Amino acid sequence: MSFGPTLLAQVSKSQFEASDGSSIAVITRGDLVNPSSMGSAVDGVMHSLSYIIDGKARLPERFHLNPGQSINKTRITFAIPRGEYQFMFGYGGGVHEEKSLASNTISFALSDEGTATLVE
Image (cartoon, rainbow, N blue to C red):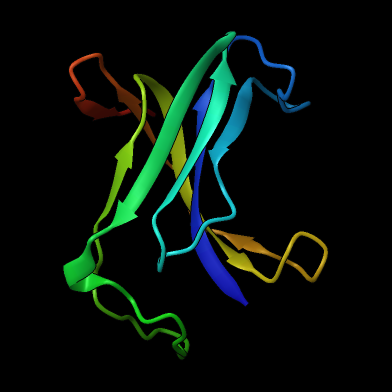
C-alpha cells in the first residue's frame, strides 16, 4: 500500500475530460519520496506541472502508521499554471490491486501572480 498526492485541474475542454465533469488529473501516481513532473495539454496549450517535497522534513520511503497515529508534517511545493484546482491524497495499492481511499479535497484558485485562494 502507498499514498501520494493528486491534483485535479478545472478545464473547459479536453480529450481526457472525465465523464462526470470538466476536470482532469494533472498530477497523479506520484509519491512523497521523489519529486515529480509531468506535462499536460489544457485547452490546446501544453503546460508543465511539478511538485517537490521539502528535503528537511522528507518522509522515509516506508513507515507504518497505527490508527489515529500521525507523523511529522511535510511541505509540498507545486509549480503549476494559473487556474482552479482540487488537491487530495490517495491511499491504496494500484489501480487494479484493491480498494483505494481518498482524503477530503482542498479546492483553490491560483492567480496570474501566483496567489492561491480557497474555493468552496
